[in-house]
Amino acid sequence: MTVIESLSPLPPLAGRVRTIGGSPVRDILAVTARPEVINFAGGLPAPELFDTVGIADAFRAVLDEMPERALQYATTEGEPALRTALAGRIAQRGLPTAPDDILVTTGSQQGLSLLTTALIEPGDTVLVENPCYLAALQAFGFAGARIVAVPGDEHGIDPDALDDLIVRERPKLLYTVPTFQNPTGRTLPADRRAAVAAVAARRGLWIVEDDPYGELRFDGAPVPWIASYGDAAERVALLGSFSKVMAPGLRLGWLRGPAALLRACAVAKQAADLHTPTVNQLAAARYLADRDLDTHVGRVAAVYRERRDAMLAGLADALPPGSVWNRPEGGMFLWARLPEPYDTTALLPRVVRHDVAYVPGAPFFAGPPDRATLRLCFVTQTPEEIGEGLRRLGAGLRGGGTDAP
Image (cartoon, rainbow, N blue to C red; front, side, top):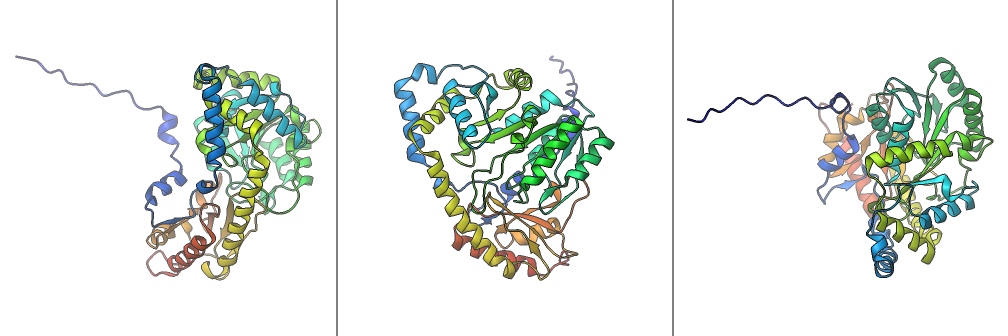
């Protein structure tokens, strides 16, 4: 007779996994994956604008000419050809950069994760914008950081408030997306960037400057990176990505920073994935050598401008009277606020029944949320689809029910 021993329970998951929730945006995308839904919730670039021919040619050339190298392990820091090309592009935009100043990452999100590993101890204080990019809040939460929002306005961080917070909270770093910010689409003006850099230098603060959208400018003149002001380059980690200008499926990003910080991040990367896929790096370098990425980005930005304008044209009819919204000069997102007592989280299920979706603003706040806010992505749909989506959004917000204001 066989004796079946009782099984003991497994040890629990790590506390950080149990206490830090998933991404509300990802959750909404899963719920609204039906093809009939016009989805303003995602942050996905328009797939019909990918340069599929150019990217395919680059991969084909790499695999034809150097298959052994392309399919082999590579150095953690990244392929020299890609780092050289990236350094040239960054320098061309006004920030002197050498290849050794760059660490290639598996998407800029990995760069943020590596910086968190290298800089943050449990209990350290991190300053963020309010509202803030969701995945940054997740990354800092996983690290056990104490997250404090910096006061600001429609233009972004208030440098004086930042100075006061540093004195009071003694933070380790400030995280910011100063150009076409996610979720608001706002851009920090040049004078504030200079002031933020000066505060960080005076108070001894790291700055993580995340720039995934900066090349997608429709209006106005480019604004220099915070890293380009004064001595800020020695205390700024600048993150960039090919996801919004080439293709997110490549999972290629980069981190520019001072040597000691890059070494620490390279050690952290060795423990994470050894290196970013070699074939993707070499294909991206080949693409930059053979194609004009700036011309491609210009074409994408022209289409995105048209789509932004289509959304702006329809918002007054779609949103309730008393709503306000911004006019981003580039990027992918528009931020709106409905009048009190609208709650965009409570309203979302009703709106989704009209086959349209947005992201409620509440999850983006590190402090008390503004529940009347919402984020709309305007780049994935055509102007005609945007018009229909806004019609559905208006019908959903006007619909009856217990969650109506």
